[in-house]
Image (cartoon, rainbow, N blue to C red; front, side, top):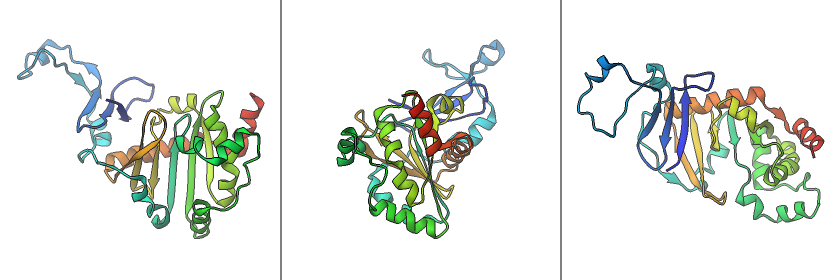
Length: 246
């Protein structure tokens, strides 16, 4: 089963860290192994398979989920949030490609060498324009490899239409994201209050979203947003960087 990074109180990549084990209500704790004989002798009902680690209380307070694991929901069930959010809709994109992009007619046109930077309005961009005209913000940070994958270059080529509609799309390299200890999963964060975390299959197709208002998950998403947004660069600037390396 996959592990999902929840958070850490370490700034230099060392333990302690918390992970959630997907599909369960269990949390995996990473920390320094307990070796003090005086402590070990006081532990109760120890099975041969068990070990013990030490972590700071602050790690559990800040990142341990207070609610049980939420159920996977169809993405369509959160469509209303993109209209009803009050201030910000923020997205982290971490994958090297998306099945929805590869299966679209625009992907075929892009592979044929067509310019897909200026696309006609669709329902998504019309809503972005309406919401940003009301003073709300649509923002994304996209993580890109070096060199960028086809899926990442496709999104970069098609981004101008979304930017023109009102989205602020920025980019980070994967090396930067790893240095910042950003999550390795995609999510939307609405009004710093609701997190919708994506689930994908091995072919990059969206299976659905886990929606939660758990304070620990929301805090982790807000911290990831703040770190990513501080270091990310706008689409036009990143596009020049990618072009210079091709």
